Length: 306
Image 1 (cartoon, rainbow, N blue to C red):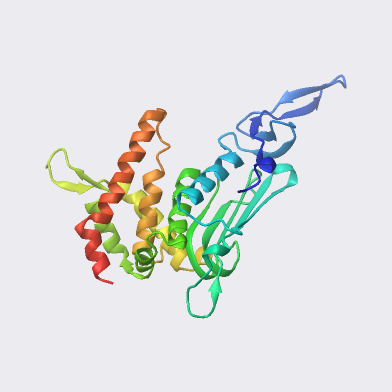
Image 2: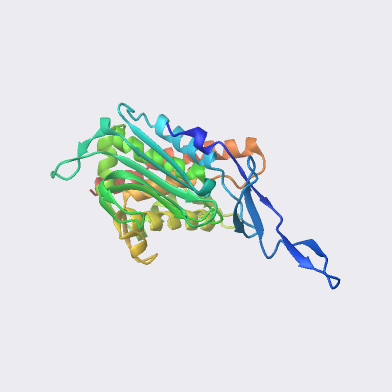
């Protein structure tokens, strides 16, 4: 799919040095304290490409691309005549991906057919945030406005909880929508309005449900619920709202589609464990919880309200 040869390098942090002059006129190198900043360089050429904070943890380009490609493949997209563009700028400081899928061209609003697109930008020097979307749109800008249907979206810095796996899950869901796998059902979700209050109730009774140790009653896990609603609000802002032109938290209505996107993102965002086996089991359990949510009476009632 995308050109891995252009992305076949890693970056690493390295300590910065400054050249100072002693009182007798001789020069010497002195290491800069890491709390001031560190350098970021390519491992293969050792070429510096940025200065970042010591807490900055770069995400390698290939890691992002491999998760995106896996999501596109699993979703069953038809790659006939598909076009994949991979651009790298400034010695690897910035990357841009684009893809179009002519085999899934379709009419979304009665005004003519649209070819599905995927676009994504990121950078190691922080000039571009992680900024990507997939959907059926005629025109788009990276400031998040589109002419058409935006089906999935991500925006954020590397250091702000960007998860390639979680983003891949969103892309997979959008790809399944486009490819026709569950197309009618997903279109119905996209067009079924969901009040924010009802989304809180849905997640409280399904994904965020836990048993209180004192009362033995079913209550909401506040951390899980908070994470789900944060994604739900962001999806509403970008999918149904005005994106970055709209202040966060102003959307009080979403859709079953944005609730589904929040659930799939949560089910794969499990990189908070150091044990690989534990990570795998957590992901399996969360995916099972999402399947149960879709089969629950709460979800079916919301579907029926369409």
